[in-house]
Image (cartoon, rainbow, N blue to C red):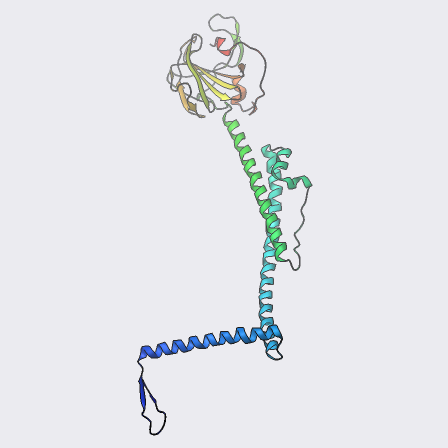
Length: 326
């Protein structure tokens, strides 16, 4: 591209040569200059006119700004209404969760005093009803609603955490109750008085006998900790498992014990094998259950009629191991 510049008829003509890159740079520079000039005019003239109230320019600026503010306000109002509706839906769901939590907490055994500590809002009594949001809720009102919902959600989470803990405790209590048969088979001799097979005189039989072949697996009636694995003249090879809360089970006359003191065992785990050691007339398992050292009828536990949490007793009795099972 060539540009010829002359100053008169007799003057010498000047020729300027521009390539493509130079033309592009000139065009960009021109656009930048136009943008800078327009921004300067807007900020210096229009804004100044709006502040000082110039007759014509200020009215034009106010109309433009008013429309922009109206559109922005309408957009914010629509969003605030949508947020208010969502807040109402969340409040309704939280009210349902609180009602469910109160019912389930009663089933889980959570006391009312503990509920008050978790959720102080429960002290105010029953509350509820449909949520009717303000026709034009402000941003501050929505922030307050959101804070209240956040607090309620934290309280509900704490409540359900406690309920889960209590339900887990109840499950553990049930797992620690010896209500699973230690041997797959029928009971040969029950708990109570009978004729002693050796002397023929009436005597108390302190457990249940499960006739079985030597080597038949013996399973833990519940989870617990192995207390002892000793030999007793009457019980023979004797295994004792502590189930907590004063509950203990004994497995007597075994031919072989497969665990050692201190081992953790779970319900149904094979812990020994049937034998005929000690004071025994033949291969069988003598199974006993005691609470705080007081012998109980194992049939009540195996039938599921024994309570999950047995009360502790203060009765003084002789050690159960001093009895003579047959």
